[in-house]
Image 1: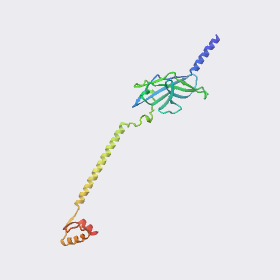
Image 2: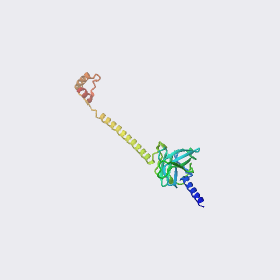
Image 3: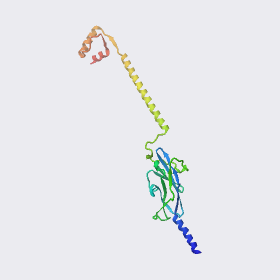
Image 4: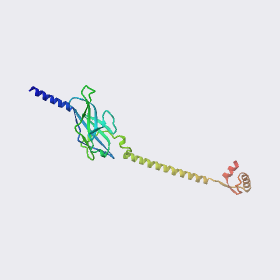
Length: 241
Protein backbone atom coordinates (compact mmCIF):
# COMPACT_ATOMS: atom_id res chain seq x y z
CA UNK A 1 0.00 0.00 0.00
CA UNK A 2 2.89 2.33 0.71
CA UNK A 3 4.39 1.85 -2.76
CA UNK A 4 1.25 2.87 -4.67
CA UNK A 5 0.77 5.88 -2.44
CA UNK A 6 4.35 6.94 -3.09
CA UNK A 7 3.83 6.46 -6.82
CA UNK A 8 0.73 8.62 -6.78
CA UNK A 9 2.48 11.40 -4.90
CA UNK A 10 5.46 11.22 -7.26
CA UNK A 11 3.14 11.36 -10.27
CA UNK A 12 1.38 14.43 -8.92
CA UNK A 13 4.68 16.17 -8.24
CA UNK A 14 5.92 15.33 -11.72
CA UNK A 15 2.73 16.67 -13.27
CA UNK A 16 3.00 19.94 -11.38
CA UNK A 17 6.67 20.34 -12.24
CA UNK A 18 6.03 19.61 -15.90
CA UNK A 19 3.28 22.19 -16.12
CA UNK A 20 5.47 24.94 -14.65
CA UNK A 21 4.30 28.51 -15.22
CA UNK A 22 0.60 28.86 -16.00
CA UNK A 23 -0.08 31.45 -18.73
CA UNK A 24 -3.50 32.66 -19.78
CA UNK A 25 -4.53 35.02 -22.57
CA UNK A 26 -7.84 35.94 -24.26
CA UNK A 27 -9.06 33.96 -27.25
CA UNK A 28 -9.92 37.09 -29.27
CA UNK A 29 -9.01 40.74 -29.14
CA UNK A 30 -10.41 43.71 -31.07
CA UNK A 31 -8.39 45.81 -33.47
CA UNK A 32 -8.98 49.51 -32.85
CA UNK A 33 -9.05 51.58 -36.04
CA UNK A 34 -6.87 54.68 -36.30
CA UNK A 35 -7.50 56.10 -39.79
CA UNK A 36 -6.06 53.53 -42.21
CA UNK A 37 -4.19 51.57 -39.53
CA UNK A 38 -5.15 49.56 -36.46
CA UNK A 39 -4.02 49.13 -32.86
CA UNK A 40 -4.50 46.07 -30.66
CA UNK A 41 -3.65 45.20 -27.05
CA UNK A 42 -3.06 41.63 -25.85
CA UNK A 43 -2.83 40.90 -22.10
CA UNK A 44 -0.66 38.00 -20.93
CA UNK A 45 -1.43 36.79 -17.40
CA UNK A 46 0.68 34.31 -15.46
CA UNK A 47 0.65 32.35 -12.18
CA UNK A 48 3.79 30.65 -10.89
CA UNK A 49 3.14 27.24 -9.33
CA UNK A 50 6.80 26.44 -8.77
CA UNK A 51 7.91 29.85 -7.52
CA UNK A 52 10.01 30.42 -10.60
CA UNK A 53 11.45 33.81 -11.45
CA UNK A 54 10.37 35.52 -14.67
CA UNK A 55 13.37 36.86 -16.59
CA UNK A 56 11.71 38.08 -19.77
CA UNK A 57 8.28 38.45 -21.40
CA UNK A 58 7.49 38.19 -25.08
CA UNK A 59 4.64 38.23 -27.53
CA UNK A 60 4.99 36.05 -30.62
CA UNK A 61 3.05 35.91 -33.86
CA UNK A 62 2.28 32.37 -34.95
CA UNK A 63 2.52 31.84 -38.70
CA UNK A 64 2.34 28.32 -40.13
CA UNK A 65 3.36 26.78 -36.79
CA UNK A 66 6.35 29.13 -36.61
CA UNK A 67 6.73 31.79 -33.93
CA UNK A 68 7.92 35.29 -34.80
CA UNK A 69 8.80 37.65 -31.97
CA UNK A 70 6.90 40.93 -32.29
CA UNK A 71 7.25 42.39 -28.80
CA UNK A 72 9.64 41.89 -25.89
CA UNK A 73 10.04 43.53 -22.49
CA UNK A 74 13.85 43.39 -22.37
CA UNK A 75 14.27 44.54 -25.96
CA UNK A 76 12.77 47.57 -27.65
CA UNK A 77 11.00 46.63 -30.87
CA UNK A 78 9.31 48.86 -33.43
CA UNK A 79 5.54 49.43 -33.31
CA UNK A 80 5.18 47.82 -29.90
CA UNK A 81 4.89 48.94 -26.28
CA UNK A 82 4.15 47.08 -23.07
CA UNK A 83 2.74 47.81 -19.63
CA UNK A 84 2.89 45.81 -16.40
CA UNK A 85 -0.36 45.70 -14.48
CA UNK A 86 -0.77 43.47 -11.42
CA UNK A 87 0.11 39.93 -12.49
CA UNK A 88 -0.13 40.51 -16.23
CA UNK A 89 1.76 42.21 -19.03
CA UNK A 90 -0.20 44.10 -21.66
CA UNK A 91 1.43 44.25 -25.09
CA UNK A 92 0.13 46.93 -27.47
CA UNK A 93 0.77 46.60 -31.19
CA UNK A 94 0.64 49.62 -33.50
CA UNK A 95 0.47 50.18 -37.27
CA UNK A 96 -1.46 46.99 -37.90
CA UNK A 97 -3.10 46.57 -41.31
CA UNK A 98 -6.45 45.14 -42.26
CA UNK A 99 -4.82 41.91 -43.41
CA UNK A 100 -3.48 41.38 -39.88
CA UNK A 101 -6.99 40.39 -38.82
CA UNK A 102 -7.32 36.70 -37.95
CA UNK A 103 -3.63 36.65 -37.03
CA UNK A 104 -2.73 34.58 -33.98
CA UNK A 105 -0.45 35.69 -31.16
CA UNK A 106 1.04 33.70 -28.31
CA UNK A 107 2.39 34.86 -24.94
CA UNK A 108 5.78 33.63 -23.78
CA UNK A 109 7.65 34.00 -20.48
CA UNK A 110 11.31 33.16 -19.92
CA UNK A 111 11.79 31.79 -16.40
CA UNK A 112 14.49 30.35 -14.18
CA UNK A 113 14.30 28.52 -10.85
CA UNK A 114 14.56 30.69 -7.76
CA UNK A 115 18.22 31.48 -7.10
CA UNK A 116 19.39 30.16 -10.49
CA UNK A 117 20.28 32.64 -13.24
CA UNK A 118 21.47 30.45 -16.10
CA UNK A 119 18.77 27.78 -16.28
CA UNK A 120 16.47 29.60 -18.70
CA UNK A 121 13.24 27.93 -19.69
CA UNK A 122 10.71 29.31 -22.16
CA UNK A 123 7.12 28.98 -20.98
CA UNK A 124 4.48 29.48 -23.69
CA UNK A 125 0.76 29.71 -23.47
CA UNK A 126 -1.22 26.73 -24.71
CA UNK A 127 -3.75 29.02 -26.37
CA UNK A 128 -3.62 31.82 -28.92
CA UNK A 129 -5.19 35.25 -29.26
CA UNK A 130 -6.86 36.01 -32.57
CA UNK A 131 -7.30 39.61 -33.75
CA UNK A 132 -10.72 40.67 -35.00
CA UNK A 133 -11.71 43.75 -36.99
CA UNK A 134 -14.78 46.00 -36.62
CA UNK A 135 -15.72 45.01 -33.09
CA UNK A 136 -16.02 46.65 -29.70
CA UNK A 137 -13.45 45.62 -27.08
CA UNK A 138 -14.97 43.52 -24.31
CA UNK A 139 -12.69 45.22 -21.80
CA UNK A 140 -11.78 48.77 -22.89
CA UNK A 141 -9.55 49.16 -19.84
CA UNK A 142 -7.11 46.73 -21.44
CA UNK A 143 -5.86 49.53 -23.63
CA UNK A 144 -3.01 51.29 -21.79
CA UNK A 145 -3.91 54.78 -20.68
CA UNK A 146 -1.57 57.45 -21.98
CA UNK A 147 0.00 55.27 -24.68
CA UNK A 148 0.07 56.88 -28.09
CA UNK A 149 1.07 55.28 -31.40
CA UNK A 150 4.54 56.04 -32.74
CA UNK A 151 5.02 58.98 -35.05
CA UNK A 152 5.04 56.68 -38.09
CA UNK A 153 1.40 55.83 -37.51
CA UNK A 154 0.32 59.31 -38.53
CA UNK A 155 2.91 61.26 -40.46
CA UNK A 156 0.83 64.32 -41.27
CA UNK A 157 -1.09 64.73 -38.04
CA UNK A 158 -4.32 66.71 -37.72
CA UNK A 159 -4.47 69.98 -35.81
CA UNK A 160 -7.25 70.41 -33.25
CA UNK A 161 -10.27 72.41 -34.34
CA UNK A 162 -9.55 75.38 -32.08
CA UNK A 163 -5.98 75.62 -33.39
CA UNK A 164 -7.27 75.72 -36.97
CA UNK A 165 -9.68 78.55 -36.11
CA UNK A 166 -6.90 80.52 -34.42
CA UNK A 167 -4.74 80.20 -37.54
CA UNK A 168 -7.63 81.31 -39.78
CA UNK A 169 -8.40 84.37 -37.61
CA UNK A 170 -4.74 85.40 -37.56
CA UNK A 171 -4.49 85.08 -41.33
CA UNK A 172 -7.61 87.25 -41.85
CA UNK A 173 -6.32 89.84 -39.37
CA UNK A 174 -2.94 90.08 -41.11
CA UNK A 175 -4.63 90.50 -44.52
CA UNK A 176 -6.93 93.28 -43.24
CA UNK A 177 -4.05 95.03 -41.51
CA UNK A 178 -1.92 94.95 -44.66
CA UNK A 179 -4.83 96.31 -46.72
CA UNK A 180 -5.40 99.23 -44.33
CA UNK A 181 -1.70 100.12 -44.22
CA UNK A 182 -1.53 100.12 -48.03
CA UNK A 183 -4.71 102.21 -48.34
CA UNK A 184 -3.56 104.93 -45.94
CA UNK A 185 -0.10 105.04 -47.51
CA UNK A 186 -1.51 105.58 -51.00
CA UNK A 187 -3.91 108.21 -49.68
CA UNK A 188 -1.07 110.06 -47.94
CA UNK A 189 1.03 110.07 -51.09
CA UNK A 190 -1.85 111.45 -53.15
CA UNK A 191 -2.50 114.20 -50.60
CA UNK A 192 1.17 115.18 -50.55
CA UNK A 193 1.18 115.40 -54.34
CA UNK A 194 -1.91 117.64 -54.31
CA UNK A 195 -0.44 119.93 -51.65
CA UNK A 196 2.81 120.19 -53.57
CA UNK A 197 0.96 121.11 -56.76
CA UNK A 198 -1.11 123.76 -54.95
CA UNK A 199 2.02 125.31 -53.45
CA UNK A 200 3.45 126.30 -56.84
CA UNK A 201 3.75 130.10 -56.97
CA UNK A 202 3.65 132.05 -60.21
CA UNK A 203 4.36 135.80 -60.17
CA UNK A 204 4.19 138.38 -62.91
CA UNK A 205 7.57 139.90 -63.63
CA UNK A 206 8.28 143.33 -64.96
CA UNK A 207 9.16 143.32 -68.66
CA UNK A 208 12.70 144.54 -68.20
CA UNK A 209 13.32 142.25 -65.26
CA UNK A 210 11.77 139.32 -67.10
CA UNK A 211 13.90 139.86 -70.20
CA UNK A 212 17.02 140.21 -68.10
CA UNK A 213 16.23 137.04 -66.18
CA UNK A 214 15.40 135.15 -69.36
CA UNK A 215 18.67 136.15 -70.95
CA UNK A 216 20.60 134.98 -67.90
CA UNK A 217 18.69 131.73 -67.73
CA UNK A 218 19.00 131.15 -71.46
CA UNK A 219 22.75 130.98 -71.08
CA UNK A 220 22.30 128.06 -68.70
CA UNK A 221 19.25 126.39 -70.23
CA UNK A 222 18.52 127.14 -73.92
CA UNK A 223 15.08 125.59 -73.59
CA UNK A 224 13.78 128.53 -71.57
CA UNK A 225 11.69 130.87 -73.72
CA UNK A 226 10.91 134.52 -73.19
CA UNK A 227 7.53 133.93 -71.57
CA UNK A 228 6.36 136.58 -69.17
CA UNK A 229 5.19 134.01 -66.57
CA UNK A 230 7.77 131.72 -65.20
CA UNK A 231 7.93 129.10 -62.51
CA UNK A 232 9.68 130.87 -59.66
CA UNK A 233 11.07 127.63 -58.30
CA UNK A 234 12.85 126.97 -61.56
CA UNK A 235 14.09 130.53 -61.74
CA UNK A 236 15.44 130.43 -58.22
CA UNK A 237 17.05 127.07 -58.76
CA UNK A 238 18.70 128.12 -62.02
CA UNK A 239 19.75 131.42 -60.50
CA UNK A 240 21.48 129.67 -57.62
CA UNK A 241 23.18 127.31 -60.00
